[in-house]
Length: 285
Image (tube, rainbow, N blue to C red):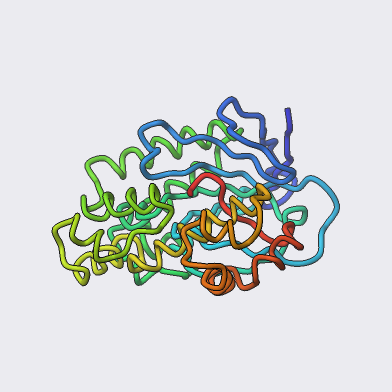
């Protein structure tokens, strides 16, 4: 069992927060990943707690874009819900896990933040903002839950309850759901024209639907699927770059290097040489 002392406005208000969880699906040095309620799995990839576990570290961490959004709450001091829109490019943050308090992340799947807030996601893409700007009632409810929870499971269960109520009766457009599924199954290899024909919409209309609900056009989403798939293969040590490029759905090695560099900010070789400087989601692609 791991317990963290949380301070809220001074030691007179300190509390102990347990990071032991029966819902854990993975754990790393500074991360604990919890499964959401089964009915939330079309919307939520996982809940994540980050926590200090050693001396302060220097440097930054590059977050690989995952076409999704997230909500973040700090569990020390006055809880304030922050949010990120769907990401299409690398975001660089300080490597401050061992300096910051316990933090709680709701990691959504692509399209979920749009269904939750009702806001066109092109307006939120690659933005960081307070959740209260998008949904004041949900922000207040999550902040209150974070302020009273005694352990990871209690906060996850309260979050389940709040999100189940919010997502009830909501769904992504069928054309968007179908196109995203087809792109995942094909490693992002299907052209927009083919996906549009399958959906019964024009390419322009399908791209408009993606922009409103996912925050980007179909081609950008497909590229992120391919690059995240390539990262998984790179971490597995899958052969030469040429073979990997073909397996990941790229036309050739030069296209792979170009797209990878555009999305991740570095070439595949540089990424492999400095893996600890990058963070990529393992539960979304």
